Amino acid sequence: MIVIDFFCGCGGASEGLRQAGFDIELGLDIDPQASETFKANFPDAKFIQDDIRKIEPKDISEIIDIQAKRPLLLSACAPCQPFSQQNKNKTSDDSRRNLLNETHRFIKELLPEYIMLENVPGMQKIDEEKEGPFQEFIKLLKELEYNYISFIANSENYGIPQRRKRLVLLASRVGEVTPPEITHGKNKIPFKTVRDYIQDFKKLCSGETDPKDPLHRAGTLTPLNLKRIMHTPEGGDRRNWPEELVNKCHKNYDGHTDTYGRMSWDRPAPTLTTKCNSYSNGRFGHPDPNQHRAISIREASRLQTFPLSYVFKGSLNSMAKQIGNAVPCELARLFGLHLIENCTNKDS
Image 1 (spheres, one colour):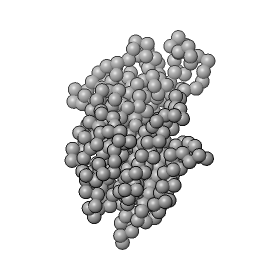
Image 2 (cartoon, rainbow, N blue to C red):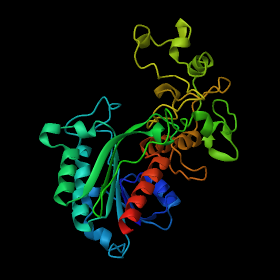
Image 3 (cartoon, rainbow, N blue to C red):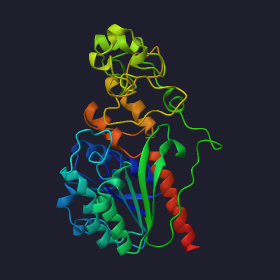
Image 4 (cartoon, rainbow, N blue to C red):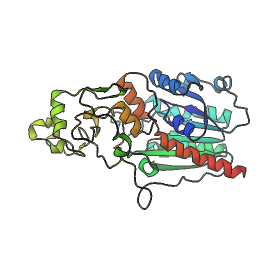
């Protein structure tokens, strides 16, 4: 089975699908640094770096053989910021809100056997009564006679060491699609934890870099934030600080307690965001109370289940953004295997 990965970013979905046995034929993204990351990890795949609104179906058919007798999976994770609860500045006129609609042209032309869509929960609620982008996508699937399911995936229920809710849609033109079985949680395999994925990395102080891995690098904390994290135990946050270290805006405010927090060793990590290497932007402090720093880029990538060998390109802030935006590789792998099972059952 071959894959075309729209809005591929740094390649989280493609990496998971590759691990499931798919051939990654083509990636498409507009971000230049994420594109460099994708191309470094998928050197045999074709790539189009451009705005999807400027790409035509013929541009794809000219560079890959979509007529070959191999099933095609179209993967798409359109930018989620216009729908994310984390984005407090989202507006109804954000041009990215309708980028998912751009995939309609390609689906009509290519008629992929399978489709995998991933985005933030809440996208399906946008303009529900006015046929927002998700409703329009469902309408397209019905017109083209696809079978489909959509559900909210709690990533920790599928072996991801992270609490991350995602809207997932799986569609098939060649048979029924069933929901993938939850594998981790109550009465199942125990959740994967932060310890499972980052405990063996070299210990670092603020500003240090592992000489064997330049991506295992601790950002430098200001003297004030260094004092703050020194007063923060494993799993703790600003509520553990002495009064003089608390920001004025937090002194009479109980919300957003994850900011300036440390992770817990034996729980899944919080949702990694595009600023997952920043101590002040979430519960991204290292869980070891003797390591006074935020998690490194390499540690963040592991909590998104990227392989240790995965290459990232661009500035540190760009790499954090790429990782925070990525589909967890293991999630894509499991859902890819589920579609292969569907395909196998159809053929038998």
